[in-house]
Length: 196
Image 1 (tube, helix red, strand yellow):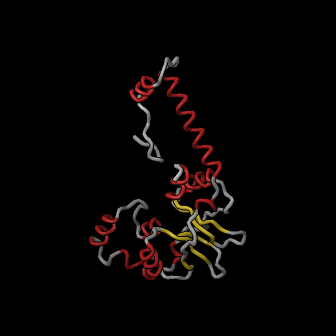
Image 2: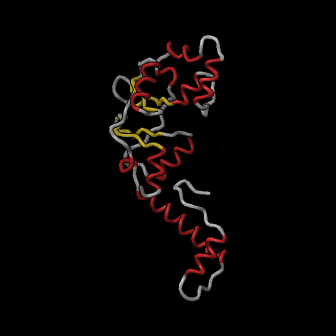
Image 3: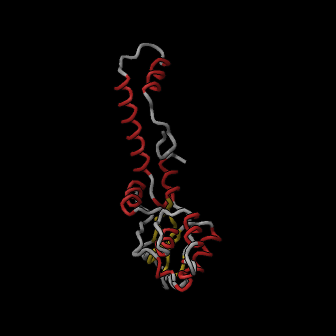
C-alpha cells in the first residue's frame, strides 16, 4: 500500500530488515523504530507543507471560461485545452465560479463520479440524449458558485484543507481584485508535498 506521495507503508518485515542492516548494535524495539519513522515522516510532510505557498506551486496563466458562454462552447474549450475544469470569470475578469466535469455530470442527472462509459450508456439508452439539454444552458447555469479561491500567499497546508473541506480538485489563485493569476490543481498539490 502507498500513501499520496507514492511512498510505501512500512511493514514489520521492513523494519526488522532495516534494523538488521544497520552497523553495530541497535538498542530499540521494532515498534519503537516504526513509531520514530512515522513521526519523522509526518513532521517532514508538515515542514514541506508549511514552506510552500500557492504562488510557488500554481500553474499560470490560467485558462478561464466566460460566464455568458454556452455550455457547448465551454465544453469545447475545456476539451481543446485538455482540462477537466476551469474558473469562470465575469465581465470585469473576476472569478465568479468554477465549472468542472462534475458540474456537467450533475446537470445531466448523474453522480459527479460517473465514468465516461456511464455517460455513453445512459445517453444511448435515453430518448433525446440528456446531453442535448445542456446546449440551451450557459456556463453561469451550471457552474459551482461562489468559487472557492485563494491568494498567492496561501500556505500549501491551507490549500490542502480547502481541497478536502470543499471536495474540489482545483483552486483558482486570485489577486486582490479577484482576478485569476494562476490555478492549483490536486496534481500540483500532491507534487509539492512529494518534493516534485
